[in-house]
Image (cartoon, rainbow, N blue to C red):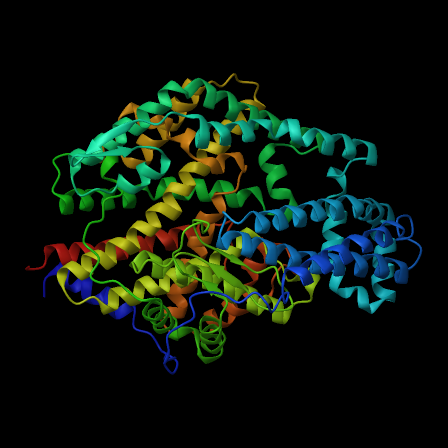
Length: 620
């Protein structure tokens, strides 16, 4: 047996699983949701909106009473919690309806009314944190001991006290709140410029005029013709040169606002301020960046294989998105859901029973229709009912993977809501993307096992590998750029659009092996930073990279039938937001502040590359 075939056989054997009884879908799945479980009609929604608004003065009257007794504390917290739960349902109904058809003005108006009411509640409840901090650690501990019904509030209360050094006086908090709009102006300006004000160019592709705005770029960047890809990339990114200074001004304004807020709240850095609300150690962020850099040879190995498959003399950045093989088939929604359920057999019968019920219920809006919001999401805010998923299912494997991803979020919500009281059911992003990505990885492993022909194997393997590239390496590169730019502002350095482009270009070339001849990165692509809206949500994207690393650990263990890993995974989901997210993941057996999870992900990627290389080396 050749070394390549031995590697392929070993990797395939490593994915052998212990499966539960297959869950078979016998009927076509509903492709639209039913929202009348929340409210029978808009009139019922409006009645609840008015009822919540009428209840706000009752909460306001409790100001100044919180510290009087354990019963008084419980009354304040129960009142606020009930209003938030009801408002979440109100906002979900309005938002889901609005996203079905964004052209319907009455639905958009309801969404705005819900947002206004949410702001009113936020303002009314602002006294609570201040009074909890005034209560102090000793008195709060005594209250918790005397009133068992306060137990469900223990973690959020203790978290509020932990953040006390960064909570200002009422006057100072009011000033920061009033300053939020001007401090957010840079982000608003960026959105207007990037999405509305740039006159995008038109190019000819196969005799047709194509507008190369952001949507046009995404639609044509994976064209099979290298000349078309090169035209699309060079034309699109050249536009950003014209606006480089302006984009630089908006991003620097955003950085300065972030650094100002961090200093105002007495944090040591903007990174520390971003991680403080959920008590995530900075070592998680910095270890991720260090380990991604250590793993770059694996990424470069993928690019070298991509060059071989594509048959190009020099791999260009414009070759990044072209698929290495054609998809073998398309799927109906029911077929896609069945593929997901089959892939998740290792999760066990209880998990599959919940998931099967979810996909067979009218909780998903998957129909492609005019006016519908683009993208995909899971809404898990309706604590008393169940999650809702929105996406536009187009029959591609990517659509199936998105469906599995969103129902990973859905299962997280189902399990957390079942196990946790409302105050600790909501989970943070550091944990949220783990089950969703684990679903995708288990689906990818299943697709690899199903692949029969050479073309099918190349497609399945390249899809699995590229997910690791995009979610681990690319998001970590973004995280490294964010860290460098924030620290530059904190050092008092003057950043411009041109300097930002050079900084980003250096990262882009290092991650993609430009100097080693792995991939050629033209200088114009250094302006890609101006295309990434996530940079205006500071220190956010790193959690996608940590999550796929954790997901790889869980998917590997669950996939090989390790019941202990599966149990830890389910317990992690059931924990909801009952503890610091870093500690929740750590309790499940994974310390995100150590190199281990990131090295395991690199090992997974190397294993997939071994399989791809074996397929490429095998006789056609």
